Length: 513
Ligand code: BES
Ligand code: MN
Ligand code: ZN
Image 1 (cartoon, helix red, strand yellow):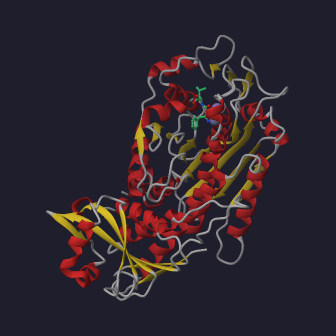
Image 2 (spheres, helix red, strand yellow):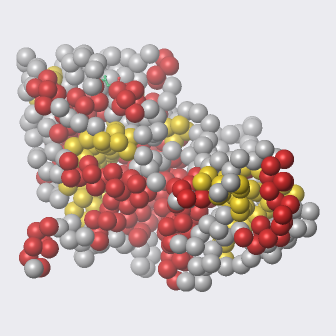
Image 3 (spheres, protein in one colour):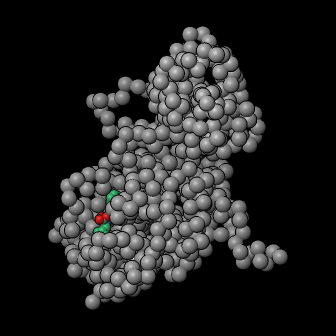
């Protein structure tokens, strides 16, 4: 376990195994970034030729490790590129901090002297360090990692002794912990995380989070098959009926006394997506343990918001099922009845996400929240359109715009996509049911899926975030993002809810006048 300390101190005189120094491109050459000036001064005019011999370009995330030979107190200096000085931002330092903690995995103490002279920068450095240090080694038995990870990370900041800074430092760690737990859940193999086990994990976390004096009050409700049947949740039951692990639904509620708004979050929780009878090709199945990323995201967001004590009511809904093939599995041709009575003709059992979301969206809207946001690894189409680092966001224009703003604040990438009227016509194309789940026209499949979901949002302000691409990183680590589950969108939702907590609804401001 790594510990984190916030300190005000000289990076040249701080005793640690390694000290991290930012390097920016300024004017014609490279120069040491804010926060590490003293290290630059200690090296003096020899620094530029040194970086030049190393071929150091100063590009974002580039790392060079140099023995300090007594120039500064720490025996090792880790230079990290921050790009152009004029483009310096929290995003840049978050990425850089993420990369450096992986570059010195054996350091007992690591002092980070990156730019941290404002609260957003300090938070970003801290988040980057906690996120970049993430590893998932639970199932490494014989090949346990030989590097223990950094023992203590010391974040150096001129703001260190201010209360606001301590709070920002604490909250940044907590946010990163929420993201890292999301990653853990996504990374769990599907034989270790079926719907029932998912519920157990939520229940255990709920117990821990609400225990003791001053702990937040969070409500938890679990639907088993019997209750799902009573409540008419034919989508969740239909998708789950082919698996030996029965489906579930979990609802968490954070309802503080000072809340003036209610945001409902809904997350897709397919603990494994084989495709069902419309079975996936072998290659596409390999990463489908990650198909519950949306559910993990909304659960972790809710617990984090409760811990922060944000004055906004939040409900988080996680419909959970395993999409399998068996004699009891749903078939193409079946008709399912979603909660509320809408009938859906199934033509592709691999388009299962929209079916479990439909029930959960209907239940979520029955509470009459002010707005609904769903998060789902919904379509490969969105990955084709936007690549694997950008989430698509679709829905009500204003809420889509607000989600984009929140993503920008959080340092995550989302991009708006339309729901053309043509899609709403197509979902009405079923000859035997109210709506068609799918129609085998490949083009714009991510937009069709959103049009389908919109049917179940009761006309409320709604945004759908398709995270099929960015939720799982099949490649190598990059900045603060590791291989495997990324925990994307937790930070965006937290930023959005923070902004909702701080602004009254239009109706309220109108009565204030
Ligand atoms: N879980 C998949 C979507 C997915 C694809 C997530 C790639 C992550 C990476 C989803 O259930 C699915 O299979 N979607 C289909 C939709 C189609 C049948 C309309 C797809 O993407 O092909
Ligand atoms: Mn599928
Ligand atoms: Zn799926």
